[in-house]
Image 1: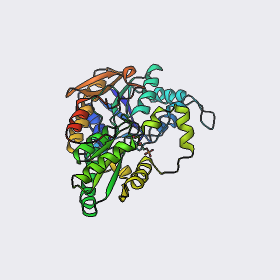
Image 2: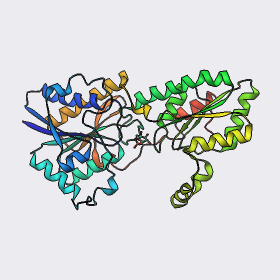
Image 3: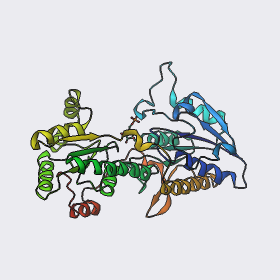
Image 4: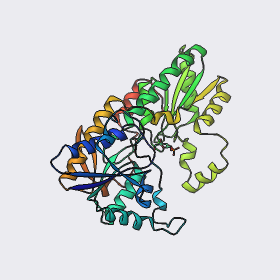
Length: 357
Ligand code: F6P
């Protein structure tokens, strides 16, 4: 008999249900008896003992369902060692619930913050297997996270839709793409959507270069320009500031996000009308794309196999198209960023895309 606990933590994304179904089906199809405890709303469920025993039927019909059937929440890692408002030791509480239910393993689906806590639980002696979810694709140790390709599709679609209206009106359009502190989503959606300028956190921009690129397009007879701007994009001047100085500056920041600041600067310098579109959380919503359905199913299946074999302490990821197990201690606390010298950036530049640098 294998008794496993399952939870999804952090921001949701597409294919969370697909991945859980993959784990459950693989284990239920094996010769071993399986009991699955679904903890509700992320680590909170494990801390406060909120769970439900999952039936086979819970995992039916969820391959294509967006969101997470278990619910999710953010439990910041920096607060995990701090007692809650009633003085409860959260880490101790998670361990107690794990032992009370006599679990063999926890299956944890999450992104960066989630992996730090998962690794801490491993260090505390719990058996843990994790799966890499996030539209940001910023988890170390895996070439790709599930949710990412679905989000690329949605962000690309947003840019595609903007294309027609931008060309009709001869305007500059900015599409702000999610991705937190990294530019994977913007880079891929930007290239796929034919953006003329792509701004990433990893390549700080110079507003003069952006204006030059817009004017060069106008001079060539293209009277509209589309910018794909990562929500974490940063100017060259701001990138030079220390963390403290930047934080201080942001206290008096008057724009809703960086795109609006860039829009104002472009409009002032060129006199061209600029509009900003923010697809926001739509990028995390809806049904997973076929790539993510296959990918998350494979990850889930391999995670199920690891647990059946009694192999714990790993994140299941993908490298060079092969599903691999990566020790949790190698993953936790590291960010996978876009390399500004990567060939994809050079190729995009050869296509005529400006990165504002
Ligand atoms: O990590 C996924 C993500 O969607 C980021 O791209 C974004 O910065 C953040 O979560 C938004 O968080 P929230 O859903 O808490 O607003």
